[in-house]
Image 1 (cartoon, rainbow, N blue to C red):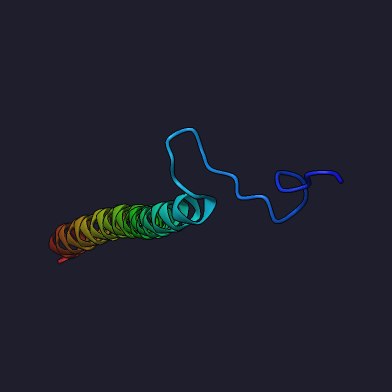
Image 2: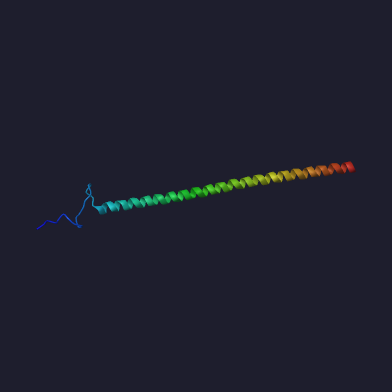
Length: 95
């Protein structure tokens, strides 16, 4: 007769710290869910940061357009003023 009590798939294996594999698996699952939550937060933070960058870029471009518009308006007003002055000076010479 052979003793097969320690051989086969039904053998219980303990870890060096004495914990069974199921206890270690449970610990990993809770750790993985925490890591998954941190990963989701990082993704959300990156997304929000990218959106803020886009918003900041859009604001900067809008400010540039406003500055160009104000410059064009200033030049138009100067040209109209110069034309009015020129028209008044020629009327005086003719008259």
